[in-house]
Image (tube, rainbow, N blue to C red; front, side, top):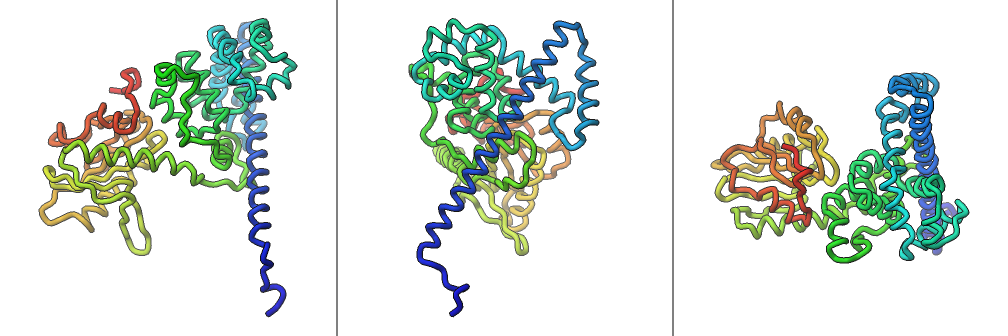
Length: 394
């Protein structure tokens, strides 16, 4: 046997160490990219606000700046007029008087001291509540700026700045920075009312043990929210499946307990087509409707392609597993958020009955389903996700 074919006994240990170091380097690089990107966007937003206030420039300057920056950096994706508007909005939100006042109250607590210590030292701020109280708004804004740079840009513009309550916004900002939540996890925590539950339970935070910091997942999310650096090579994170496992398990058990006539067939139900195979999150048979019911859980926002995939699944079910006396199969897409207009256009050409739920049932399902499937409230309770009236689109 040649030397090339002999694998040393301690090779596996060394390989594990090498992979760990590579992953660590990728994570550090991703976070460094995100930090510089968010700081750049923060400063651009500040400049736009200051120019408009001090020089009286109108909103047309944003459109002009977008054209000039796209011309100067044709490969950059972040200098559209809409993103420049978001930079301005983020700066205004995070430097608003109400938010900064909340930051003084919250960041001075001892429980945040270890987490904030590097930022405090970098800015030369003496630790302690008294020093934070005495900070001028500009210095405090710098502290918030550094805190914001720990969170990917997409988190800010898609979720955090849409939270109206300054205390609630700061709660989720701190949690995301400390625990490395992805956008999907953050969105589900907001919908779950983690902030409200923390107040009701008298706790300063309510961060589930099932959502630890996964560096690979956070690095992936960081890259999605910044420029695409392919050399970092981070793909879909396996750890996100932990959250999916919990939600699907709760939803399955709850639906079965309701007694609506659901008979559970399987989870990750396999469908074969040629040499390929596909998997449905949950598959039921409904005794009264006499049809198969497929449920697909999306941890993020609804995307048009979700409807196409469900339509495809239903075609397969009807062709391969539908009984001779069964009615056409029904699909339910359960997602964290949706836009009704987007859902309407996505379902317009679909021949199979499909419902899209933002923890509620979309009224595109057949009328005969009314009263035979879980309600909005029940679906929310199944996942432990309270549905707020202001968040429901009619």
